[in-house]
Image 1 (cartoon, rainbow, N blue to C red):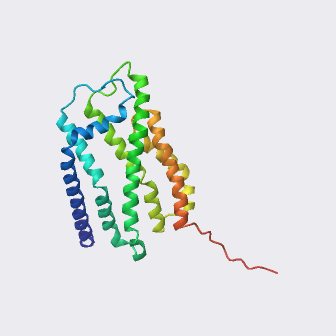
Image 2: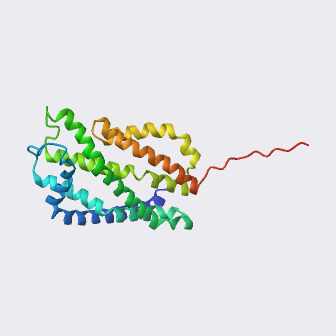
Image 3: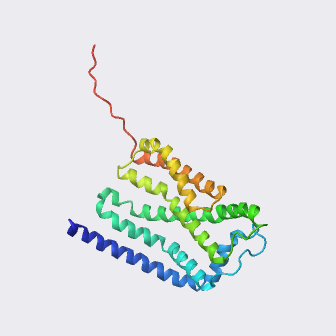
Length: 243
């Protein structure tokens, strides 16, 4: 049994290695522009907080390294998704393998859409809420490194969250779920969405709602997408008509 798994593990290591290599290359390039990237990361705070809220820090080098690696990952998304598809495609039928280009393209676009939503909507509104309640009393952002941690966590979390319709669509293509199963699971999905939002966002209601609301919409959208590829077919019991 273990011998059967070995080729899959070897393929997984190869694809992870390729993805990591591409991320490192892009991160190396991004490091040369780290000041501009950090400025871009801080831009959503402009007009929200008064002045520069950051004091001290563990050193700009580690902050620049962290944001460069994250930028390298974002730039590598098409390669990462291509390698992911290459890993799972051997287990698919020929008619399912044709989705490779749509999968890579839509997955990349949805991840970027999630990061854009976090950057232009969630971060300004979330930090404005925090600043109104804490800005006059304490520095809720002690260091630039702390902010970059929150920044990358939010962008990554929203990027992953916006993959929900992509994941559910392909589960529907594989015949693993139907629109009815998604409807039946809706109540549990809402609970999971709010738990997910609470984990990945700062401890404020605004940020959590800003993640939970689009996720709920994407879940509902997924129901219609799955209905297109794998609609629920009600089983009808054969009955003898008596005349």
